[in-house]
Structure formats: structure tokens, C-alpha cells
Amino acid sequence: MTALLGILGILIAAFVSPCSGFNVSQIPRNKRQYGSYRKRLGAYLQHAESIYREGYHTFKGGIYRMTTTDGERVMVPNKYLDELKAQPEEKISNKKALVLAAECRYTGIPVETTFLNHLVRADLTRNLARINPRLYDEVARSVKTELPQGKDWTPVVINERLLRIVAMVSGNAFLGPDLCRREEYLHASIRYAIDVFAAVRALKRWPKILRPVAQYLIPELGRITDHKKRAKAFFLPVIQERRARMKRGEEVHEDDMLQWMLLKSDSFNIHDDAELALQQLSLTLASIHSTTVTATQMIYDIVARPDIIPVLRQEIQSAVQEQGGVMNTQALFSMKVLDSVMRESQRMNPLSMARFSRYVEQPVTLTDGTRIPANVIIEAPFFAITRDPELYPNPEQFDPYRFSRLRSGLSHDPIGYKSPEQYQFVAVAKENLNFGFGRNACPGRFFAANEMKLILARLLLDYDIKMPEGRTERFENIVIAGGIVPDTKKEILIRRV
Ligand code: HEM
Image (cartoon, rainbow, N blue to C red):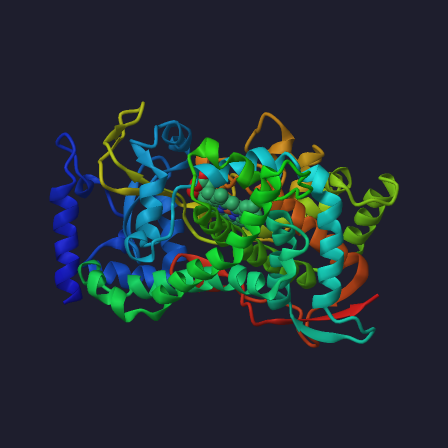
């Protein structure tokens, strides 16, 4: 059955997507991707990492295709990314790629990101310096409530604790300091994403043509609907109360995403408040787990390199002292070793092996004559990029000072950026696709970096942290096909200083 569907898939790819005499079957495959669909898929499931590396080195200058768990992909080298990102959405579509990746036909996840993207860029990021004292307080409070306060070493599943801390701190910016600690909000902001991921995974286990039926057999899809209902029940009274005060001309003191949503919804043609509740839910989907997983990886890297803990502590203390004892935006900016450790951790542990996933709606001919047919999904082989010795010398080694040295000019810049500040954690570049690329690159990265720095700085100042007794090597990641996640069940040891 699967083989039959595989053949059907190949026929569809070959005959439904011809473009001016050029179709996907004319794009080469790398060696390990020969054979039947089933064999290719099996190889991908077992050795995705080496297949990405092999393809990257074999086809360094050109496009090639490979079979993934989510269908066929056309891999594009870095050199084409600038040209591709300049193409309009009608030609190279971010949305359509999302619709397919998130199985939106069944999950109903909204992929229209214009409103959120605008709010995160124009309001959240621009107002970060102003709301930072509040976020600083929320970090201090949540770290205290979520982490043990004793002076003895205590084992802690740090990922679980971080999830709640990140949900509270983000929630403070998204809907204010009172509502962000309400258990129903925390539950939704953590569980919604888990249920969405589980539903998508469950759907993808079924062949495409059976998914219209399979949807009725997947309980997580029902949970998504419940989350949406509960989000409306939670947010609507809050929104109505705020709107009523605004209408009466009362001073509205709230300074959060929800308020900015209320102020701007009309200009984005959103006239239904229920839609704002769903936008808040989408915000948690984009932000909570991505930030938590990234921060977990950073802590796993830090405890595996205990020599850097005193260096980081010293840097954090001086940065705060220089700002008169306040951990403000400027203090966070001057923590350059911390920034370097964060970026190196993200380089070593990207969330997925491919990035810049885009659906090609219309055939594209690049300036060097390379053609990409319509109806394919293109991707950049990000994992292989992070391990390219020409871009990152000694790439397999975790080097905490790699990026601080580059920023201060102490290391030769192999990429040759115009400014060494391109090596900051938040900088997006063809060689650093952790936050994506182009107009849909993550707008929340400044907020995420700010939040993670606040949390890591608090943790390093107030706590000693270390690996469990008897262990020195870093916790291994869990690799599932092309996805990379930390083992979220691992314990580290922690005690108050
Ligand atoms: C370390 C944490 C995070 C990581 C690794 C991350 C990563 C990403 C990536 C890879 C994309 C897709 C970019 C592309 O395809 O080019 C994205 C999109 C997005 N992210 Fe993040 N993100 C993080 C945190 C956040 C936070 C905290 C927010 C909100 C405050 C946020 C809001 C968004 C939004 C709204 C989009 C959609 C942008 C669009 O489609 O125009 N993200 N993120």
C-alpha cells in the first residue's frame, strides 16, 4: 500500500508539476537517496543528519532533491537565498508551506501572520526597553517560585521548570502581570502547542489520501478545538472590560500585546474579538516551546562546560554594576560572552535540520539560469551549514567564545560580514538560519533573546548549577528524522548560592 502511494506520489510530482518543459524529476538526488520511495524514506528516518551533510557537500553549488518524512524537498544552497527571499509571496510562498507542514486543512491553525508579525516588530520589540523592568521582576519572581530555594544540591528537571518560567515571563508581556500567572493561561500556553504538534504528527502518519478520514480518529484534533473555545472564554471578558474602559475614555494603564492588539485590530481589519483570543493562542504557539527548548539546550551546554560559569557570572555582575545595579537592556547587550554561548549553543543544536521552507507557486529561473519548477517545497540544509568548516572552523567543537572573539575582532571572520555584529545571537544571515530568513524571519527573536538572557543571568547569579553526580559529558539530543530536541526529562543539580 505504502509503495503504491509512493509511486503515485512520484507520478503526481512528475506530471502534475511540469513547468515550461522542466520538472522536478530532472533535479538530481544524492547517492543515499536512490532507490524506491520506501528505501529513501527509511534512509532519511535513520540517517537524516548524514544525508543532509552528504547532499550539502556533493551539491554545494546547486539544487538537489531528497525525500523526507514530509514528502519530497528541493534543497537550495546558500548562494540562492538572497534571490529567493526577494521573490513575492505569490511566487515563493511561506504561507502555503506552513499550511502543508501544519496540516491546516485539519488542524485549522491560522497561518495568517501579518498582524502578529507587525505587533511583535512594531510594538513588542520597540517597547522592550520600556517593559524590561517588569520582565526582570517577573523573571525574579517566577525563578523563585519554580526553582528550589534550599542550599543543598537538588535534582531538577530543568526543562519542566523553564516551561513555566518562560510561559509566565512571556505572558507578562503578552497579557500583563496579573493574568500571566493564572493557571488556566499557563496550562493553555504550554499545552496548546503540545496538542498541535501531536495532532500534526498523528496526521502525518497517515497517507495523504486517507487523512480526510483519519482526522476523525485523532483525539488531539478535538483538543485543539477545546483550546480555542477555552481561549475565547478566557480572553473575551478581559477584552470586553478593556474595551469598555477605553470607550468611557478612562485611562488604560495596560502596556502589553493584548492592549496593542486592541489598539490596532481595526487597522488590520479584525473586527471580531474572538479572533484576538486566537491570535493570543497563536502567539503562545510561536513563542513558548521554541524559547524553552532553546534555553534548555543552553543550560545543558553550560553545565557541560563548568569552566564558563564563573566567566559568565563575572560578566553579568560587571554589566549590571556598570548600569548602576540595574539589569536593563544596555546591561544585557554588554553580556557578550553570554550572547556568544547562546549563539554557539543554537549553532550546535538547531531545532531542525532544514530551514527556509517555502512552497514554489510559480516556476522560478534564477540569475545563473538554475530553474526551480512550481509545486515543490524548497528548503535550505541548515544543519549542514552549521557544520561547514569553511564557515565555522572546527565546527564539531562547542566553543563558547567563538562569537565573542569574532565580535571583538580577535578571530579572523571566515564569512567576511560587513559588520562583526552579524555574529550577535539575534542576527539573521544565510549562514545562521536559526530564526529563518527573509521577510518571515522570526520577529520575536529580540524578545526571545532578551527573555533568555534575563533568565540565564538570574539563574547564574542566584544558583549553582551542575551535571548530575558522576556525569561530565553533555546530555545527548534526541533526533527524530530531521528534528533535533534536547532530552527534556534530564535532571541537573541546583542549589541557591
Ligand atoms: C528561541 C526562540 C525562537 C525561535 C528559535 C524561533 C524561530 C522561528 C522560526 C524559524 C520562524 C520561521 C521563520 C522563517 O520561516 O523564515 C519563526 C517565525 C515566527 N516567530 Fe519565532 N522563534 C522563537 C521565538 C519567538 C517568540 C518569542 C515570538 C513572539 C514573541 C515569535 C514569533 C514568531 C512569529 C509571529 C513568526 C511568524 C513570522 C511570519 O510568518 O512572518 N518567535 N520563529
